[in-house]
Image 1 (cartoon, rainbow, N blue to C red):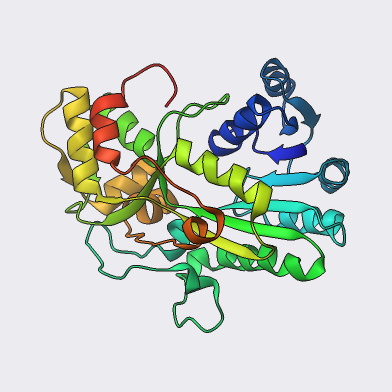
Image 2: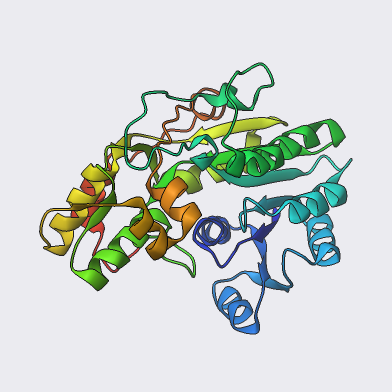
Length: 307
């Protein structure tokens, strides 16, 4: 199969692209710079020069492929529109990467009990996203609606991903931010009381689901990607153990915003995102193997090899 991957030099897209190459597929990947293009080629991925704003480049690469994985930017509506227009009526596959911050709240380190299911993308579900996340939800719905235009479209909405990647980019987003701050300051910190909870998933299990979705996900499918959950206090406690630092400390939201920016502090690190996904398990036979982010942090955070 010929697969075009946006975000092929990133964490999710790079890991998926690497696994596809290893499985014998022909993979092309969007490359913003010449250096990234060279790195992709060294990994067995044919680079496609361009950015998400280059509609013609995206359209041509999508038409030349059998399937598209859009893993570069969950919030770039223009790229999604370009890919849908190019694939309309072809019956080809479009797998779009979203993230479970779509159900995130403004909890600032406090726990919220609600757990969301895959019904959140249904018009009948009473849930409504926070205003800052409404545009991403609209993009997810646009991808799902592409099924009505002759595209086998799927949205994979990942929770907090941990584990070292297999492509050019080794690290994910949330845990590395906590680790970088801890290493630079000598103090591990979580926002507020750190009682906020996120569902979690290991990168190996994420990649396995992408490959299953490419092969057999029904058109118009939406799946939460999760296997376990943990509070940020538990995760920062594990980080403190892994780095040999003192106990994790609470941090006020204003200081966190100055360090990480508003969206990362409020929605990536200070919110609750508790989700349950049964569709991938029931429909695609997905069997995630990793269930404890805190065990991984304590045992693998400082390891140099992938996984």
